[in-house]
Length: 468
Image 1 (tube, one colour):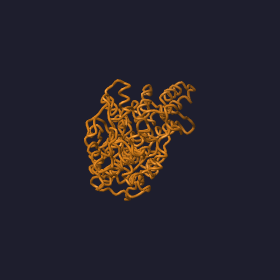
Image 2 (cartoon, rainbow, N blue to C red):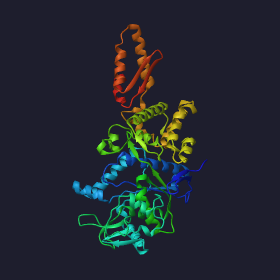
Image 3 (cartoon, one colour):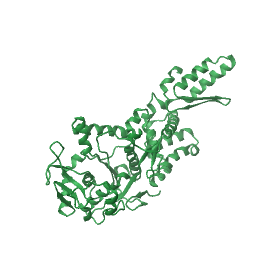
Image 4 (cartoon, rainbow, N blue to C red):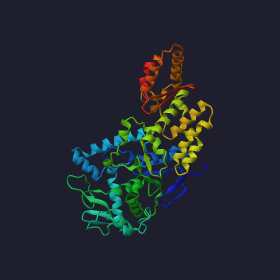
């Protein structure tokens, strides 16, 4: 079998992935700032790195892979939300984390092995900052501690930009106490009404960038295999992570491989509240979208390409998944017969090629021509869907049992009624059956070749009870 190949942002090329320790493969992904529902753009990296997590577990064994994704639970956005709502910060963050778990798991994602929260790692952050100050990479000014970017000769290695270019093109906070406009905050003072912790520099709270460096070091050590996130984090967040981590632990590599997914658009336009195309994952789920449908649309575009979410794509994905799930349910095999370990080797090979999820989905279509036997094909498709996070018993039982639509039964019912009507010239029963099917979201086609029924996105099996 081939080796996993990933496009490393740091080296700007696709290269063979060789873990530091095959028995301890480590991946860290930047998680959410928990003050509100996750929007669909937030879901893209979660799904992308869930696929990589599944692939790594398949290749190296689940007990040899550790995946960490953090929660930023101390941040100015959270503080502002608390002030505006009158609610305690911990109530907001706990609620938002619960929402996040519910919404992301509805998209078929596995929960990471470790989910560190920033507020639980303040002592580690303070210790790292102290070390940076002692080694001359950081300095105190006006109650702040800032990282001196000029102290790191390799600063800019990830984004490929010089400090001068960064200053010219970036929106940075120009503060009089900064030695260089690109210097970034490691620690800042807190007022009496803001959350804060004691430190050598007074009561305060950490800057955004230091938290991931401190948490990844505590969880994984000074070197680990993969660091991921959206490409909007490449600069300044990931650039600053590399700088402070490598300066704090010069004998380590921090992350060997950096992966970044592209951004998401909605109906060809940047997602924006002012354009009315900004919505959360929960809003889509509450509108009736299957989590598997959302996931399918995301996987249909390679992670390094911009993704365009459209209603047309979602409808097409849902119809395809409904068709496959109905074929699977018709075979009536046991759940324990379906294992992700039985995934098609072709899908694994596509995913090994820099997570080519588009081709992996194409293989699901190709099974129709590759496996003639209906039962064997359904069993293989179920295993493939399960591995890709697109199949579960929950989907089979949603909308009153969408997976148990017996198309052949209703086609025969309508065909028999039509045959009788041709003799009696009374089409009342045909019209009644057809009307119920249409109301349930079943497209009906009748012709000389017989009756053909197709499920539409608004299909609701509960509305077929009158025919049972």
